[in-house]
Image (cartoon, rainbow, N blue to C red; front, top):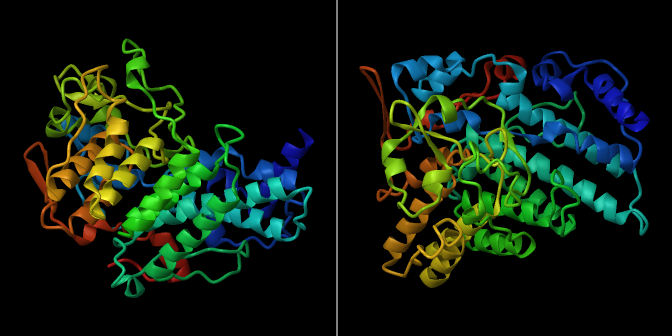
Length: 454
């Protein structure tokens, strides 16, 4: 108990209530003139990196802007925040002041700063034969969480990564030290992604092969996040390699035939498919308030168990989403996402047989026993269509669809204008519209003068 209280004391004295209350605004606007009390031991650092703060993820705001849900006027008005309603109608011009716990910029830099404190403390401890296992686990954990939030920020506040232009595009502030006096500026998009890749490769290399608890990350999860990063860089060879490595260390897939279909929330099982139990902090109420897009719902085969487990029929005859793996929405990496990245990467590299073999591993666990007919190779275009369709259906509400739209809109075959009808109002979002990039929060611009998004 003394150690836990010491860590809590450190948190409050270091940067006010920044860490626990996500008060990044105060960190940016009112830099505290206090002598920092830093963690001194590996045990201190271990406690610091395992607080519940690290179950908070990002990208919930972009999920609300995606094409997965429909709204009536009443459902739209039931969203509690004006910012959420602006996200739904693609009307965000200013990133509004939000409760700290829902401000995704704050949540991200909160965790990043904790990781930087941990890494600074580790640099002051000698790694030796006696402590190298825990030392490496802690360093790998800090690099993983920092990279996870860097990627969340890039996916939300930056354009899609393209190798031929990334050096000329704005990335995010790469906060790499715990120095609260450090100047803040935006790196390029190339620097942003290369730093994420560099740190995730180090993290995956030094983390343990097996998780020591549900809330601890291991190699499989670090490689999974690396695979996600490479996919969103269009680096399909490295995405394939990282998926292979992730699956080697973490290959559990839930057989949906074994679940209790009569339960109100049959998938609220803390599934071992998750690498970490992560949930987006923007309150994504559409899962229960809105209704799943009807065309999306209709795309599920009648023998597909996801059609039963993911959706709840409401009194209006439409469907809401109930397929969460935990009490809140899940947005972390998982074995199914790894298999889908693996399959897509192989298809884009010309290995259609290998791609569908990976996809069929997953699909065999999603259909009624004996009812799944394995996908067979057709043309390269047909193979990719199948994989992308299954990606959308499997990763529904995982806060990935928005970034998938950003990347797929560059291909005329998949470019899509999103249309949303709310009452008599009809809203449109064409492919590659500037609104696919959210504005930098105004308080950050006001304080630091960093370059805003157009």
